[in-house]
Length: 70
Picture 1 (cartoon, rainbow, N blue to C red):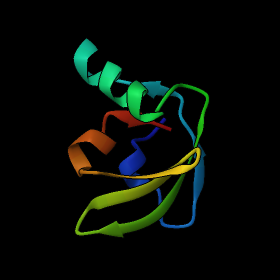
Picture 2 (cartoon, rainbow, N blue to C red):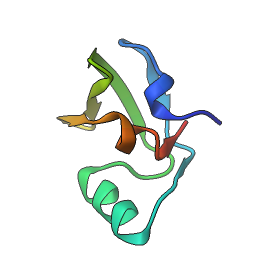
Picture 3 (cartoon, one colour):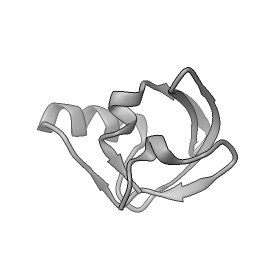
Picture 4 (tube, helix red, strand yellow):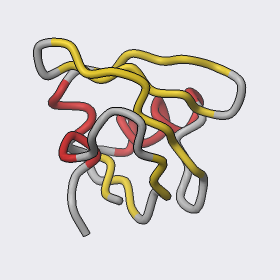
């Protein structure tokens, strides 16, 4: 497993695990980041990621992306 922040633009990955406190995991789940779902990296700007999750595009900073394992 490796963190989502390692994924390159254009790559589609599957979430294996989400780390962090319960509040953080709950917040990410509400945004659509759940174990087993697919995420596409749209772009990377200064270490921050723009991600396609289901029908939405979401921006995550590097610290949050490091909590999502692929």
